[in-house]
Structures are given as C-alpha cells and as structure tokens.
Image (tube, rainbow, N blue to C red):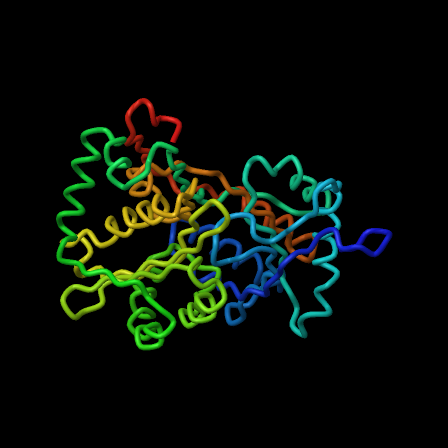
Length: 339
C-alpha cells in the first residue's frame, strides 16, 4: 500500500489455502455437517471440492505475521483498506473461485485496530491461544529456571529430565539435514495427524531453505534413542523471542522417555542461553505448556465469505467456535507469578 506520495506504508502477505471440511475432527463436527448441508441446499459447497481461503498471515506460525505497517500511520484505516484490497485482488491471483478471506492471528492489544474489519463484512472468532513464557531477567542458566519453580514442578521437571537421559541430542546442520528429512517427515506427521484440524501441512523440506537463510537464528535439534530417531524440535529467534516451530515425536517412546517434556525444557534452555525475553510455544498442548510456565495469549481471527448470504451462515458457525478448555497451571513461586 502506498500513500499519496507513492511511498510504501504497509504490506500484507497472503496465501491461498485449500481447507477440507472433512478434516475437522473435534466437537465442531456436528456444526460442520450442518454447514455442509446448508451449503449443498444453497449450491454453495461441494463434498468433492475444498473450501478455498485467501489467508493473510502465516498458517504455520501463531501470531501477527500477516500485516506490517510503518509507524505514525492510521492503522485502523490501513487494516480496513488492506482487507478490501485482498478481496479485490482475488481475480488477479487465481483462476479458481475463492470462497472466503481470512486475516489471522491478532492479540488483544490489536483488536481496537482490527475490529474495524467488522465494518467490511468480516466475522471474528477466538482460536486456541498462543502459549507464551516470559523469561525472568534473573535466569542466567537453566538451573535458575528450575529454582524458580514450586517444589512440585521442580521435582516433575527433574523426573522428566532423568527419564530422558538415554536420549542423545544433535544440532542439525544444512549438511546433515538432507539425510534426516525422510525420518523427520514421518515424525512430523505423527504430530500433525493428532491435530483437530489443519489449515495446511508443512513441507519439512522447507527446513533446508529456512536454515540456509536464517542460519544460526533457525534451530533444529534431533533426538536419538540408540540409533533410532525419535523426535525433533525446530524454532526461530525472532528479535528478543524464541518462536517454537514444528516438532516431531515417536509416540511409542514418548511417555517412557519424556521426549516432548524434554523438548519443552530444551526450548527454555535455548532461550536462556541466547539471552531472549520470551518463548512463543504456539497453540497446541496448552496444559503441558502451562506446566512449564507458559501463559495463554488470546488470538482472534477474522473471516468473511465472498457472498453475503453464506457470510451470514458462516457467522453462525463461527459463533460456535470456542478455544479448547484446559487447566491452567501456575508452576512458579510467588516472585515469578507474573510469568
């Protein structure tokens, strides 16, 4: 987007996503079936065709990664104009009809800006929160983190670390990545197939270009049990934050060797060693992430159908969507309760 002097003041990143209603595997299945039935009667949907969504934002990372605005601009007006431009841009980017337009994931502090999207037909709904850990400035080592935990959770952490002592970790390089990719793909699918629904499946081969371009700011660590690959984690250093990316797990050994718990503690150790301020763990497995100190950060998505009648139907569907409930755990001593 340009101002009257033809200087760039904002841009949006967009991606065309094929979403299959059949992929929903949670308590919304009954609602999805109702939407599908109404859609068939109105000749608005087909069981054979995917629901095509033009998405502003990164479908593989939680958070605000879709719209960038220069300082000292009218952000409400720019967000609204970008949303309208994305709709108008439909005919230029695809020969196939786009069903809906989505802008994701906005934190509560941004809603006074993004709620302007309601005036151009967008419906808003909440999704599972991003689990965020704020690192205490007193933590110079991982042991400092452990000392900040209440006794119960410090014991739990040490037990998990003890169970994972047979795991051997290795930092992945560009040279070793090519050989590891086939097994990493299988481990990633183990995790992604457990999701209630996916907007898209990540191509693990993308790790090559991420590592080549971000170098040490992109981290991949693999976990071996003997000579068998049983897990991996990935993440990127984003200014003062460590953004956890995808993980892969062999669930056959996960419980016995605390593979996933070990990964969470390794993320924390990596962030402390890199002098970072926060970790964005993403929005799955919220309870176990809260057990290591992460707190929920609410996220809002805006969605509209290209046609007015289906958009009203869509709003009824979106009103039924609620974030997954989970037990919020507060593992820190009183001094660290702010975390």
